[in-house]
Amino acid sequence: MQIGFVGAGRMGRPMLQRLVGAGHAVTAHYLFDEQAPPLLEDGAKVSRSLGEVAAGAEMVFVNVLTDAQVRAVCLEDGLVPAMEAGSLLVIHTTSSPATAELVAAAGAANDVSVIDSPVSGGPHDITAGTITLFVGADEKTFARARPVLAAYGDPILNVGPAGSGQKVKLLNNAVFSANIGALAVAARLADGLGMDESALMRAIQHASGDSRALAGVASRGSVGEFASGVQQFLVKDIEVVREILAELGHDLGPLEPLYAETAHRAGIYTS
Image (cartoon, rainbow, N blue to C red; front, side, top):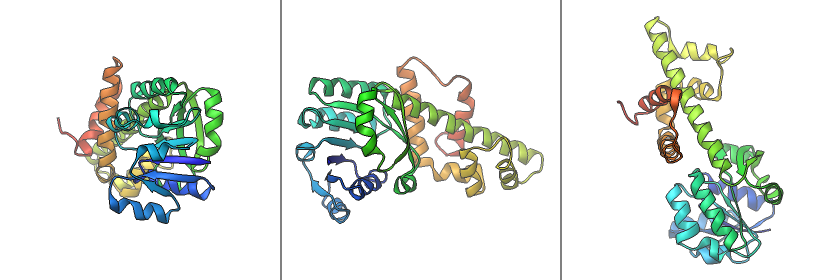
């Protein structure tokens, strides 16, 4: 299949590599000269032009960093209008459900199907072909996309219409951060009881309090070390969740104190 790819960075590049490895012909967008040689080495064609990336592509993937960049690339910079009639756009960036719906509406006006498919996991999961994908799409569009997404995604979960993937990802992020906050509270209690935090975390891994958040904490030795290590991504996720829930007329409710604890441990804010 002919594929266009925008955003071949930390998460996008291993996706591109897996797509090329699956036999797809990929044309990747790049902004800076130093970005082109590695993509060529991966087996992709490269172009600075979004129009060239979209030309002839049956599917185009967008994996930029922010919600604003999704809107800029897809709408303001003209990716969607440049895409072929009948083609499919996949947005992997964690962004606002409203943005997914807006891009989907623009796609419908140009006979382009749009799905939002944020991910859960890291580059190592993509390389292994085991990244979790939350897909917002109708059944027909999902069926079209799934064989290609399977180049790096497993499981691939269809969670509802356009925008639903983003809603699941945001709520997942809220729960994950709250889990870290709960562990931070447990660590503080352990200190008050004269216990070693790392010993507590290792022990809970073998009990009903286990979680993926705990696995990360245990691997780093403490909640503070883990939160600091993922700060770059927690900052983005926490701000996105807060802003979008506010846009939709909701807040974190009972999760708020745990969320604040996570943010504090990550050094995001201290109030």
